[in-house]
Image (cartoon, rainbow, N blue to C red; front, side, top):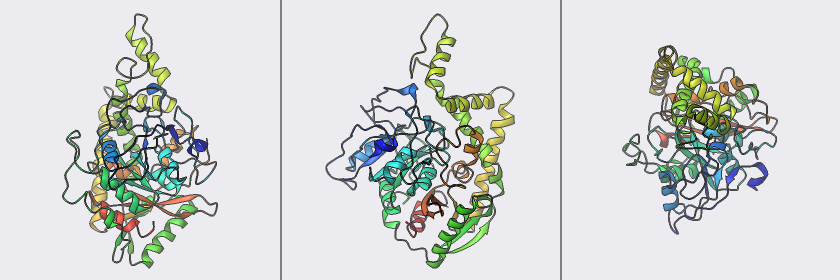
Length: 426
């Protein structure tokens, strides 16, 4: 059960409609997505006991489609982490690789799916937080194109980067869930009504890759763990055997993608998390005549170490005298990354790389070295900077039995192509 590996923060059930495309299915929901009448903590002490007065749009669509929500899944605090070990409610263990992390920040969502405690789950992906846990837990995760899925009701970490997406045992099931939650929303002005993007997603999971052109960015393969690279090429061989072809492509800008991503993400986080001051949201810092001290006390007690680190770094990057030096340069790098991806996708139907350059780490291994954790996101963060869709599918296991994921990246609103290609493997 999920309690054995600490995957749920709340196990309160939300019933769905009697009929619909997801009737009889259970879909767990990450704990940074608002659920009316059910606690939503974002994995933080700051929001312990907070009960939203409304449902996120994706939750409304889930329950209207007949899905039952069995609980709210554990996560890195405010989505800040790659291992689901920064949660105020304790770390999540990987049911597919005991003793190892499940990836993050949607580790709880991937874990309940891998263990069979939920049929599917929703996660959020700011820099790989759906694809990383999907890869580490041996399941499927889709990071949609920015604007395909409403973010209304998502507690924001970095607005310009994050998307809600599905985690499921197979590509077809993930596509079914994506089809339910996708589409424009009057509550979210960033959503787009892109013609045909939300229809027939599940039907696209036909596994037909005959004639598919795959671009392999050498920059996202070089430097990866040897066992991961070997498993990745085995998966590419499998796609070739089914009629696909591959060629190498260049993405020179990804060398700077991790730095650009963290400057932008931390800057947006410092702005978004300013509301958690013990007055508007969060636990009280007490008041003894000095509001600055009250705010500081609330944030000192309510935030964990990783959140405080990112807020401080983001505030520094946005401060007078440093905005142009860091934030503006990061945005310039972001434009370069998008340009590189668009050029590469002009020459290929999809791009392929290992989802993560390393297998799942052992529990506790990266907590004392944040830089190692940040660098582990090297293959996933560029996709968020470019606002493109990506899918992680199981590629196999290392000789030690640790899951490895294959990441496929497509053009904007090219989810069907990714679903078709991914379904050839899962």
